[in-house]
Image (cartoon, rainbow, N blue to C red; front, side, top):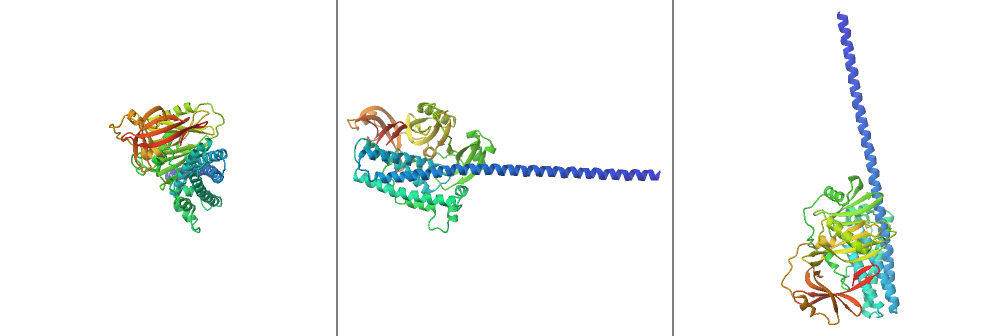
Length: 466
C-alpha cells in the first residue's frame, strides 16, 4: 500500500510539471504572436508614413517647379514689357505678366514654408499681377505707357530676376539633398540655415533681402493688404496641440486617422499652424489648422478637370453653401477667377447689410462636379470681428453729390474697406459706368471724402478689379 501511494504521488508531480510546461509554452506562444503583430503593425505604419511622405513631397515638388517655371516666364515678359514700342504688343505682353504672376502666386501659397521673405515674395507677385493688368487695360485702349510706368516695370523686372535666381538656388539645394521638404516644414529657417551654413546667405535670407527695399507702393490691389493684419482678430479660442488639430481635420474632411499624416507645426509665418497631408482614394490634400483656436487656415487639393458641367454662378452658390455648413455665415461673393477647369471665388463677410471686404475667404471649386477643392481663410482669420458700425453717416444721395458727373450710377451699398495703415473706413460703394468702363467708387460715409476708385474688368475667366 505504501508503494501504491508513492507511485500515485510521483504521477501527480509528473502531471503537474507537464501542465506547468504547457502553461509556460502557451504564454511564450502568446508573447511571440503579440510580438509578431506589433512588428507587422510597425512595418505597416512605416510603409504608410513613407507613402504619405512620398505623396506630400511629390506634391510640393510639383508646385515648386511649377512656381519656378512661372517665375521665369514672369521675368521674361517683364523684360519684354520694358522695351515694347507699341500699345498693341504691350497689351499682349502685360497680359502674360498678369497671368503668369497670378499662377506663380498660387504655387507659392502651396509651399509648406512660412517665412517673412516668402510672404514678401507673395505680396510682390500679387502686386505685379494687379499692376500689369492695370497697364494692360490701358494699352488695350490704345494708350502708350508713360516713362514713369516703364521705370516701374523695370524695377519690377529687377526684383523678379532676384526672386527667380533665389528660387533656382533653392531648387539646386533640394535636388542635391542639402535640404528636404520635411526639414523645411518642421524647422523652417533654422533647419535651412544649419544645412547651408557654408553659404554666405541662406536662400530664405536671399528671398527676404531681395525685397528689403521693395515698398509695394506701385499698386495696392483690390483690398489685398488686409491679409497681414497683426491683430489676428479672427483667431479666437485657446491654443491646441497637434492631436486636437488632427481631430479638426478628421471632422472637416470626414476622414480617419489612417488617412492623415503630419508635417509638423509651422510657427514663423503669418498664422502659426499645424500642417497635414490627407490621402483618400490615391488623392492628396494639404490642410493647415491654426494653433490658436483650431481654425482652418488653408486647404488645397489638386486634380485634373477635363470638362465644365456647371457654371460659375452655380459654383458661387455651392461655395456659399459650403461656407455655411462649415460655420462661416453671412458671406457674400465679390468676384471670381476661372483657371484650368476650376473657379476661385472671393467671399466677404456681411454685417448689418454692410459688406466687410477685410474679412475675406477664398474657395476653389471644380467645374465638372462642383467639388470644393480648396479654401483659404487667412484674411478672415486676421481681421474678422463684429464691428461697431456708425449710424451717424451721410445719406447715399449726399455721397452721390461727391461723384464725377460723368459717372452713370447703377447700384449703391455700404461697405467697409481696409487701408494700408491697418485701419478700416465705412464707405458708400457706388457701381457705375463712364466711357464704356465700369467702376467702383468709394465715398467716405462719415465725411464725404473720395477714398478709392477701382475699375471692374469683365474677362472670359471672371470679374476682377483694378
